Length: 159
Image (cartoon, rainbow, N blue to C red; front, top):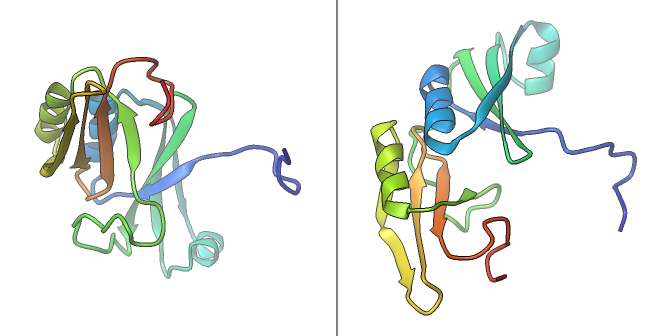
């Protein structure tokens, strides 16, 4: 298996948010991420890289289970979009998935932290003792919550 042409390692996944502290609290308190570091940038070089004008970027790097998540907040020019859930068949990243001990408890905790539970997506499979539902973070990013027996590190469909 190839490591990629000159790629040293995966770095992080970026997520644009409307309120940096609200999202930090949501991901840390609700989903168990821990804060690694913060970054603030502005100026011509960041405008060029980000393809924005007069940008001011504040970021917080979080980590959980080896996944690094960068929360990006733009005091200038601000965040775009209405926070509505994107369709699962829209091109691009669709969701983050989490194995949870109890779907209902996790969903309630996320709702209390500013998220929304999409109850109409809830499915139960008694044969596999599995329950799944989608939730949204405070900015509309989809989160899959999956409760199932077995190894929490196993991929879906594997024991």
